[in-house]
Amino acid sequence: MLEVRNLSCGYSGGDVVKGIDFSVNAGEIFSVTGPNGCGKTTLLRTLCGIIPYRGGSAKINGEEISGLKREELSRRTALLSQTGAGGEYADFTVFDTVMLGRYARSKGFGTSKADREAVERCLEQTGTTDLRSRLITELSGGQLQRVFLARAFAQEPDIIFLDEPANHLDIKYQLKLLEILREWASGGKTVVGVFHDLNLAASLSDRMMLMNDGKCVLSGNAAEVCRSERLSEVYGFDVRGYMKGSLKIWE
Image (cartoon, rainbow, N blue to C red; front, side, top):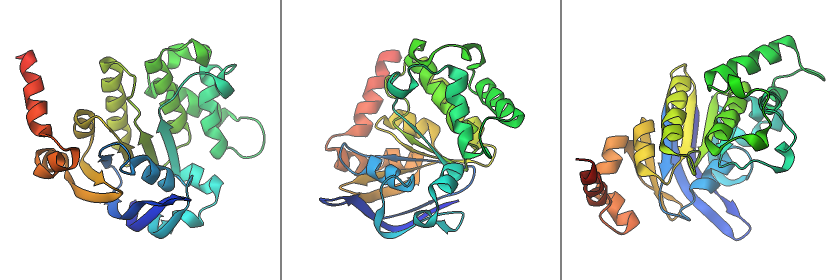
């Protein structure tokens, strides 16, 4: 599904991501974690086609991302990031916002019966049907994030990229978000997410990659990464000990 080889990317000041290698299969959830400034979001923005890569290769189903037109990339991928209500969405209803995801699939102007049916399915899938007529600016953070997830689903992509999607969400909505994403991936789709929260990353993911200074430090299944000594080396303190100690309050 997604194959990344020796990928380097960054901005005018130089490479932020340096020679990254990994692959993600259909039906798999893959998370990227690491300290602030290690290159996680830069990597994600590059895989979405927002930032061009300077070297290496990134392919979706064998096709180079840099060679795909924007319209085709929008049909293959969707991005769910940290969101806020307002700006260009101020006058949009929930239904209209989710319909924006259909533009990558629509032919010509206007919306078809198939588009409207697809939006209804995505609203039901994300538990937002009862919000369909509400304005985006009237929603809570958790509701808003589920609406933007519905919009991503409406694109019918092969891959959804997540950039800290659970930030500012309470624990109920975090768990709901993970549940919806697991169900979506089980249909043969792929999820690639960037997380600061190691617990969320581990509970959602099949495999994880730990980054530091733009490079892959460790990659493996969630348990292997979370139990590795490399985790503490990268973060500069006993991460595993801290996590285990913090759970004692619930005993």
